[in-house]
Length: 354
Ligand code: NAI
Ligand code: MG
Image (cartoon, rainbow, N blue to C red; front, side, top):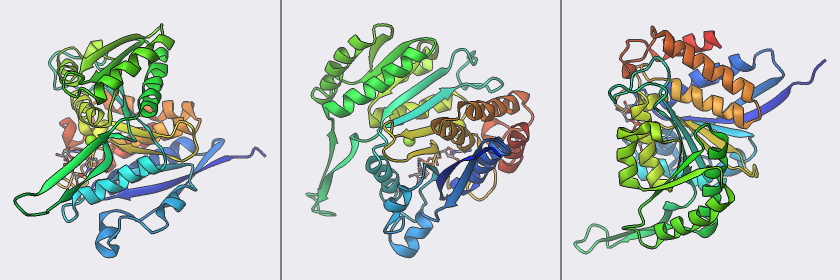
């Protein structure tokens, strides 16, 4: 009898629509792996804002130790109106740093059958992937706030850029660009205003590019790059960006691809010393939470990225292929894509297609 390979996944569905879309992703992964050589075992971790309101912490005290035992982490969204976003987002940032998930990989692609809010743009025009630095930069967490509530209150939020951190994210971007059809890498900078950190970023890019002569390197100030994503998306392929810049650019990328609800993200520890984490890029969407109408595609696609990371490219392709066929069929769409389908109807259609 063949031995099945089992992967263990820690699941933090989290808050709001996170709890509505993660079951869809779990169902898709279970369908894709059913009867095959690979099996996936999910362990639900009841952490997030509700947990915080009961325990004054976002996860168990030994949360990191528990998370470190899994092969990967599958996250929905964290955030709720009753809890400060600094607290809820703090857990995501802490996991990314603690497990050195220094690459935040975010594909941004207009799927056939969807219409972009940009006029006259088709799937051939919008096919990018952002390689976002995920461990330092503007989101290092360094800083503080003193004299709270007084007229002389001060807040300081310090960006931390290291040569090591910049070099490794640029290399990851160049490696990826070398494998993609357009072999083009756009580096998001702002060296005209951030004259220390971003000048160092550009200097390191000049060194790293020499190792990748086959990749066309271009640098753009991030504001101009944001505009270019809207005016000339077909000229962009791999985008390498700092933590804050990548955060902002990928919301633009997902919006021009049809909806924030379809975009997936992978927080990767390339050296595999720690588990990587996979999530839709959207948040908990309190404005639509509880109504069963959230788009599950971002979560399902993130699940496919997880299968790819675990070594199963063919299962990734199966799941993404099913998403593409259902979307291009055009019948079953959630309200964010202009339809009337529920999360469950869209998820069921994708699972059946798998
Ligand atoms: P959001 O992504 O939750 O929502 C922005 C808009 O997009 C809302 O109008 C929402 O209805 C819509 N939207 C998002 N995902 C959708 C989906 N799958 N289907 C249909 N529509 C969708 O961002 P927002 O409103 O800025 O943040 C809400 C909460 O989520 C906050 O507490 C925030 O801190 C948290 N958040 C958490 C993230 C995470 O867990 N990784 C990421 C972003 C925000
Ligand atoms: Mg964001």
